[in-house]
Image (cartoon, rainbow, N blue to C red; front, side):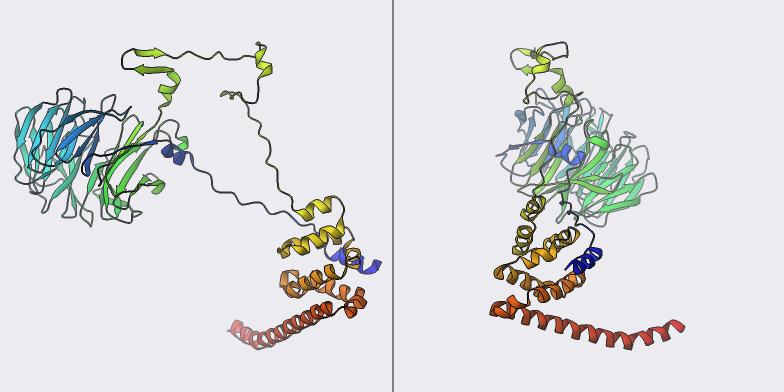
Length: 528
């Protein structure tokens, strides 16, 4: 009995290794940043939200255009401030002036109006379009001019004070749907049309030819200048494309992650607590598929995605990175509000009647205080504390517990009762290392021996287990021959085991014959 045990122990000295449990990928800092916007629904706005525009000036209120109304919302409370309803047709677009005091809006009657934000009175009415106006924008820093475009395929550059047009551009062949002013120059702006083109105009040029033409390939729904002024993002069809303006309109990347038409895009900025990507800009896109995508155009990849329960038509992002607004086709605005770190640390709360009121500051515990050494587990750690977390307890299988208690036979039977052959083989190898496997086999009763023979029948011909199990099968038959002869059930297991071994032998012989046929052909091919 000692010689077989020594032979087996030399063959299988390796102990089994526990497999590491797979962990779900944790969220990136940027994904946590975009998920930190707490959702707030603004319902019942009659019809689809065609435009969302944030004021460049603090406190960055935003305007929503829907039906024949233009409503201003507070960016902090997300409550409506005022509404302008002096429109004769559906409002299509709105744009704040750089100081946030005036707002321009266009409608389907072909009229462009300029309103005072506080008094809601119409200061200027610009008439010149013969079809619905879909675009109106103030340049980034120019307070005296604005540009517009509409279904008459005409782009106009207006002198707001004189209430008259300065330049008229007729380069597009279809509806003009979108546009944006360049951050590098107030005289440069881009417009997008359903003729699949985006054109960059320079009002300093006397003729009406475009300074640059870009072919998006599909009807253009939206176009924006990126903050550097050297890149343009266009949206149309199911794709968003990035173009190099300085490089002559070269296509840099095409993002095709939407399933339906992309309806609106805007620029969003990662706040200071956004991890590695802090103080960087992203392109936010929404589409009819109900998805909002966040696109990192410096690395050309999608960093975050959110789904909403309705087709999305418009999107806006506040300059202070605190508010995000998304307009839908069913008259609902999904606004997201995020706490700005500076506001939280200041410890101030704003009340309508009391103004600013300072919150009472909590006394900081120091090592010189008696209470410092009697803090409970509920005490929240401060920024400088080093947190020590308890390691998570690893669940140990039943056979491992029994092996720790040196109950070898019980561990062997427990593993055989399970459904995982890897655990059974691992327990066998551990028992071989402890020189207890054959002793456990000799102490098995008839029912337990049946479990072992059934396991050997199923897995003894598996290549990765065969070297151990075939040797063990031979020892089991030799050691327990009398018990096998006396039991019909055990005889049945032996007959099944014999059939599986004979079938494996036939397969191996066939493979050797095939190898004998192929090997000369491979030698001949190698000589050539």
